[in-house]
Length: 421
Image (cartoon, rainbow, N blue to C red; front, side, top):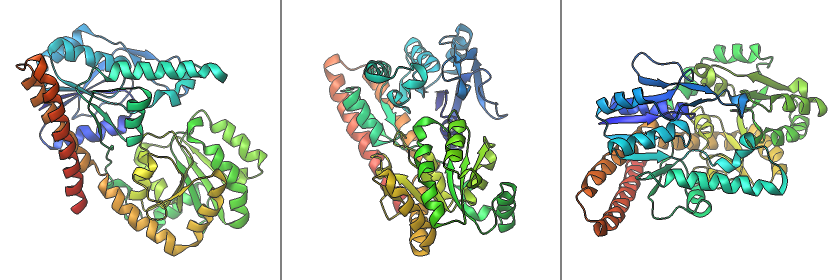
């Protein structure tokens, strides 16, 4: 199978699926903006000319030209079976044009509910913000409905597309992004390696580590966690708050820590190399997150794979894979964070239970299951697309309903199979 993947953002997810598909014998071609990623020697990577994105400059994103005649000619020679877009912007538009031009089926993964992030693009506050949200919904709908089907990483995103963007009569499949859980296993790191990392960060060997790892940005609500830290430190003085990552909110959080007079107990690492991320998980005693805007939240699965118990703010998408008091703690109110975090750090039986059940959840969200589901979906969509070419218009809708039911049934069965293994 020849697959084209249009890449903007969500790089980790795309790279993992690319490698998984190649392991299964498929040819995968990745198209990305120039200067956005470092190519691998074994990667079929095509770069489109790009320019820095003027909005949200803090993320150093690049915007590719939405069409390239030279690249389009190369794509024609590849004899592609399917196009899988992962962005609604320049490269997503390019993929849609290519699919239509060469009559190739295309599917789309909708990763980001843009109305939660529109403040980076259109900085409007107050009542007029409703217009930017409407724009984000209309934009999302107009792009996604052109695909043969839509993939979302969570039921939350599926509901958003159905009820907020009002997408109807278009198959939407919930397929959580899988991760390679092996690099995150705690046993990969010796006690000496963990002790050395803690020492380099100014954390004593016997101090507990409350860990946040991810983009340091407004929507992550790290300030909520920070605001509760004085209460936690009062109960457990032998504790540090470690924030791993970088982003536009770092300075504001540093100032918040100073105002709360806890800056000596809060550590900011800044950006760390991806290869070192699992090591930072290995020194965490509890993973915390107060964000309610995540579409899936891969860091939660990474924390589970790293045997770090989770305390998070309740959100519908998190409840899809986190069961309160079983494989994580979900708090309803922000003021519940101190009690929950202290409980996890002091109750070994609770912590061990969360860790063991979390490992089970991590295995169920592996890249192998992700690959099983995408491979099946690709084959079904290709066969369906070719079959519809010979069907009369009246029969196509009936055919689409049959395919939707069959794929939904197969996705459920694949989940059961992995769950039994």
